[in-house]
Image (cartoon, rainbow over all chains, first blue to last red; front, side, top):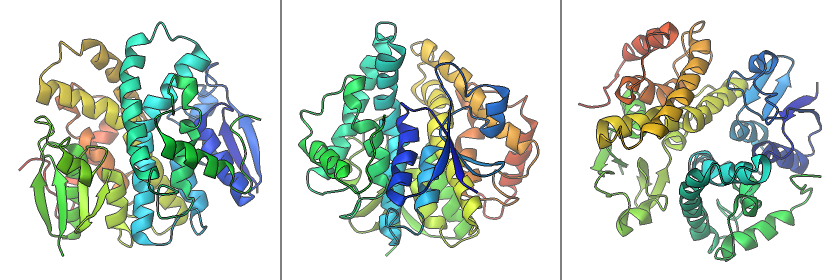
Length: 201
Length: 201
């Protein structure tokens, strides 16, 4: 059967999966769940993912895989997007966990608050703290990308896809990439990849 | 050469690595970095991990792997702690990302604030929010563990090690496991594993 992706269009986490599937030429069914309208917290959806979040990839009827980066690993095993070399693969994993712990909460969340909820005033203090931590995360990426074309080895992998998703729309969360030339060149490099697709149609 | 682990004794993230290495019988050198004294933010340490965090496993001189869960994956490949089955492996990954995104920030951070920084009053609002999200994460675990012995399949894996690290000391962050009998039985099950070691000597 065809994979089924439960997702919310503006989600960078969902976009990671859409981008990888486009690169790999994998067809899939698409089911939109609007998180702002609470559609991932219904009893039906909690049966799909008890953690109440998208994306979720339904691998076969009733077999569901949540967590965007776990889906990236699952789909990329045995492809050029996940290195066969043990150390390189470990470094890919390192970037994936960095993304979920140090990057996404500080760069994706401000974008959601400012651009989607439009509640910048209400969350002023939270945004201030996340701004500092978000720039720190961008600094860690810049340190690598100032001297290398991609995050691991010299090839485009799921580490790049995972970090690209929210970095390339960081301006929607109030971040400027002006001082990050390595990141900007890397963004151009990713957008030039075969079968690249944008986050929103 | 021997692995070298940069770590902070009370860290649950570091403990994950210590526990797995004990199970696997892997010897290692140990270097303590006190995060409260800022020892992970020195220029020397930032050369080891630009993200300024422990644990970091030095695989060979100059080759460093940050991120506790990436280290767990690296060390467990080819062992019974990481399933060979593709779907089971994907579900392990799913729990590892769940741990870093939904569990650790809400259960480990309150423990650090209350027990190590001892600044509960100063962080009252933050703790209130994390308390709600932390119990939600425990609820997701309980849903699984009420009916299964371990998080993936019927065997003890790195998914269990990753989630156990901060769950079994959740009381130090103000959480009660009273209403989570599945989690409590699972904690007992883990503590009965061969070569189990405690988080602090």
